[in-house]
Image: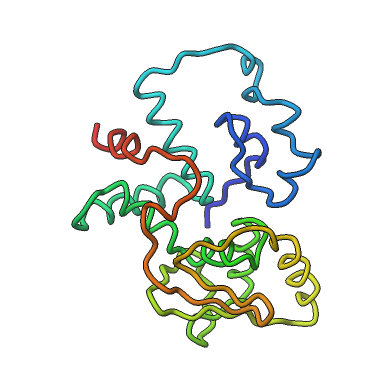
Length: 208
């Protein structure tokens, strides 16, 4: 399986904003983006005026990196969004929000989406009491999410819950952090997506 091995902090610097790919570390003085806000590379400090294509590409790359996907997988999601009725950009973001690894992150059981993806891969997550180890699994309304605690992971999960205590859980989810359970109350809407993104630029890029 293909993997993205690029350093997380370089991704934030390339997009020119914090993507919170390292969880709570991004909120401390150790965040590399706070020390070097310019793009990585020899020419990172140069000011470059982006073309329309450049703006569209950067927006697509930003969303890809937030959700931790490679180009092929992201393009497949876009193809599914196009085939659905409605606004393509909003449908795309809604599908990405419904990914199991993102749901685990949004419930506050993981400090980053990357960590949530590892938890799913390692068989710690159950959907409706059935173990699921596919991070890209799309959750549905009324699905119940639970974590299987093991002696090796109990401490980590407790630390994650404490670290994410101040982070708000989206309204389309309910989270029971004490029992490590959550539920999909409804499908996510465009207004539920907090980070700034112009999805129309992504639609325009793939429609070229």
